[in-house]
Amino acid sequence: MRFPRPRSLRGQMALLLGGSAAVMLVLAAAAFLTLRTEDPMPPPGPWPDAIGIATTLRAIAAVPEADREAIAAALSTPDLIVVLNTATPCRQETDVFATRTLRRALYALDIPATPAPLVMNCTSDTWPSGLTRVSFDVPNVTFLVHNYARVRGPGMILATLPIALWIGTIATGTAVLLLWSAWSIRRPLGMLADAVSRYESQDRPAPIDETGPSEIRGVIRAFNALQDRLARSSETRICALMGVAHDLRTPLTRLALRVEMGDDYMRQDGLKRDIGLMKRMLDNAMSLFRGFDATEEWEVVDLAALVQEVSADFVAVDRPVRTQADYPILLRCQPLAMTRALGNLIENGCRHANNVSVTLREDERALVLEVSDDGPGMPSRQRREALRGDTRKVPERADGAGHLGLGLPIVAEIVRRHQGHMALLDATPCGLMVRIVLPRTVSSAVA
Image 1 (spheres, rainbow, N blue to C red):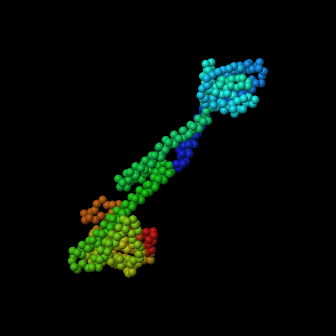
Image 2 (tube, rainbow, N blue to C red):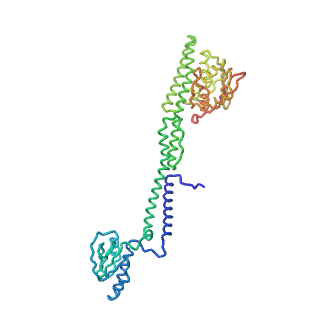
Image 3 (cartoon, rainbow, N blue to C red):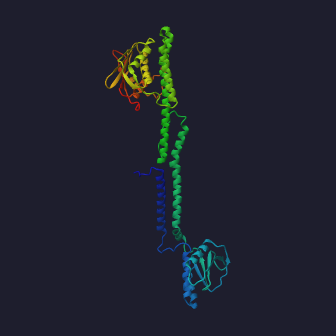
């Protein structure tokens, strides 16, 4: 069974501090139960000695002088020696902590009808070491006090338990926090630093595991998102460059054929259209590389006229393309993108077949564009791969004729952008038919 733990850094730190405090409390309770005695322990510090001196002094002052010797002898203990009417010279030493605290305690008691005592740390040849001398003039009494002698061994441990518990809790909590920080925070941050240092050496780095506190996971999540955006942006630009390189082949091929076929085919309007088409493609590619994703405006165009124009460019260089379209058929689209799609479909048909036909028709809801040929067709598996083709993936190499194989993936991407559907079907009696269905109303914002 796993116990839930806080996911935030603040909650985990609070849990660690609370846990260390609880452990220290358990240890303190165990120490108290082990070391306690049946007799009550005196309070710590100088107060037992100060109270004992004040009580003894009152007892001696309350009895006749003849009985004071007996009272002094009866009240003397090894820790609190009572000397009555006897001069006890000693050599004064530097005050220790026990002497200073005992002096403060006696002054705080403010014993009535008695002058302030003389409290000093001194040594004598007849006294054992570690004694504090307390002298009173009235009555003439001297007390020799063992420094904190009433609290020894287990009693000292119990007396100092509160402050030891406080210091131990702080020390334990700090140690636990340091160990936890070294493991729980440094590990995911180290993974993040390694990923940043390896970023440029990897094509598409794998995302980092989101581990650690919620604050650290947020940083890792943001880095993974940034890494993914950069990778997708790079793939988009590579795709745009390869798509333009692929689509430029069609107008360049037509220009080359016009030049080879001579003056009869070197019509100025056809040359201008091909050059203008290439210029628009290059302008769109340059816009994308400058950081603008929406590279072409949406316009309402006559799609039938566009189909006739693209087909006429192929017919002008002796390509067998037939067109059947009603006039006018208006559609809100990206004109250059539709030109590229039609050019790719007709170019593919001309490359694999002897005849290509383009049919455009409309109904109340959609436009249907069909490009068919009489070539060998395409196997079903290859059709599925072509429709699933990801234009973000760069082909490893071109075919023998220098084609990159991006024609149908580019067309599929353009159709998807226009919210349409594309299907690869069998033509009659043979060949391949590409059917594109475009809705009458296309939202440029969604596209």
